Amino acid sequence: MGKRGFQTYDAAREGRQKGHDDALEFAKLIGCTKDYQNDAKAKKDVIDLAGDAHSVKSGEKKWQLFLYSLSRFENDDFFQTMNGIGQLLIKCIEAFPKKFKDYDGNDKIKRSAKEKCRIPMRKLAELLKEKRRLKTFIDKSMFNGGEVNYLTVKHEGTYHIFINKNVVDVFANEVEVTNSQARNKNQVPEQKVIFKYKDKNLAELEMRNDSEVHYREIRFNMIKPRMMELLFSTIPRKVKYEPVLKSV
Image (cartoon, rainbow, N blue to C red):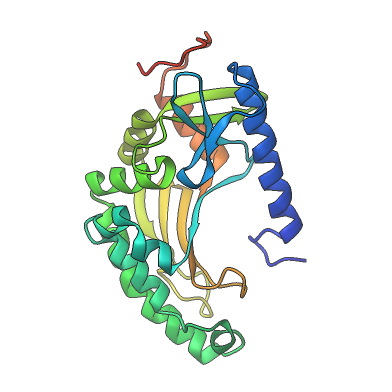
């Protein structure tokens, strides 16, 4: 059994396959062929007939917006020029020993690394409380810095299409940014940046150090039901389908 809160390998694989299946289904619904265009590395799951890109989300519980290692933050120009955010993400990673074997099973080293991580995590939360920075961060995380035009979500059997700018604006205007707190004496506070909506966790930015496979990686997850609640309550919905999608 996997650790609480983490997917097993098989569950992760099934989730990826479902994502591919739903992207194909959506592509066919909007008139694309089975060999539709996409660019997964750029978050472009489906490119429609108008040339616009869709990030297609189908998970029922959570969406993983990214899972990046040190090299991504060091080499991605966008993160490097994001008003210090990229540098702080690097410091979070570098708070932990380079080798998993030096970290795993050593409670003293674990505690020391987590205490060191608190400083950049706290600074990240402070930076992301500023709406312009938060918009830039969400735009990068969800839409690869504006390269993806739409968030397309399969929800209760229907595909809902949201314009990137609307999603970014709504998220930045409605969430509260804070750090995680320790629930007991064995936990270390400020290990995550939490994005709350109506006092409930909507998204979490955290270090992943639970396994050697994903050690020293930063994950950004979003809770799907709460995000749908936010989107549906703030963005008007249209039910008419247009073969050529247009921003409004």
